Image (cartoon, rainbow, N blue to C red; front, side):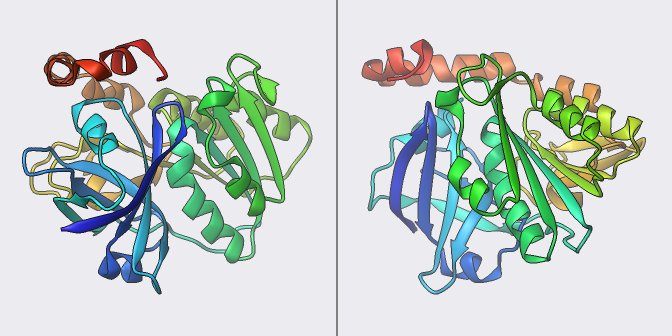
Length: 287
């Protein structure tokens, strides 16, 4: 069992959990993730390790409540146990001194972006950060990202905070300003990564994206997370989760991510029947 130190909301349906996991805390590197199971009847949930404290033996995880298993995770209290955690998994991020690195995060994708941007900063890079969210109440880790950034810009779809627009508008703004960009790291919704990569390809800017398709075992055994990269089948859990953004078949990935949508809807409906007091929260927005 893995004890939860705290589990608290940081945005609308987004929570920050700190868990006691000493071995993982000592071994994790930027880009690594874990797979956890909330309880003995829960499914596996892949989550990037946002941060760790090897001295205290803790890891930090950020997740969004979107389906049955993440809502179950959201019900966990401080001091409760998680049934299982496995990690660190995946290939660590390749970090070196590139020069100017533009870190682009959309929505909850800002969580896995943070440790990568932090590692890039520690390697001596200049970090220019673009954060995007649908609205201000969905923006996370702004201050943490600001602390490791030489320049940080926020864009919201509805204009409720920062500039109105998409992260691609922010990237185009940097290009128009004449900034020499040596490397881009983009993490967020698949459609966001698709258009960031399209723009950087036009300007010949090396780009890394982190793919978060369906993962089951996290070790490459099940094949559920297969993706097409450069025309070849890759497994996001063991070959990634980071890939050359210009080589990913995003349309294929989007189709795969939709494959179980109806089953997920049915599962969430059943879960809400067990917790009627949560129905408005689950289906009606913020509580």
